Length: 130
Image (cartoon, rainbow, N blue to C red):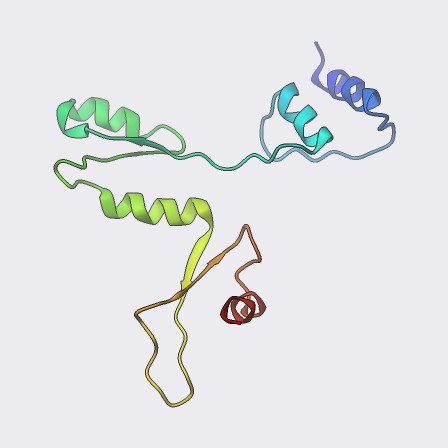
């Protein structure tokens, strides 16, 4: 089946006859329907493979090269810092440290801002404080 024809047919079922579609990733027909209906939101997924201390280095290398994947060993405390960093990245979180004029920065309790919620702007930070 021609993908362009399939998409056009699905759009016509939802009474969309004149539109422009931009796909930035490969999707299947179910994902397109979900977007058209508007009842689902797709988020990034991170696959975490634990117990890498129990398999060969070749198997670890193969798993580590898979998309959206990270390998760890909780028992041996391997790659946990990278896991934490990747989780923050996937969730779009950043820390913002505040300081009053003439005072040292407050490093104990940073503001946590998200690109997926209100954004990572100064305006979002001020709303977070109040």
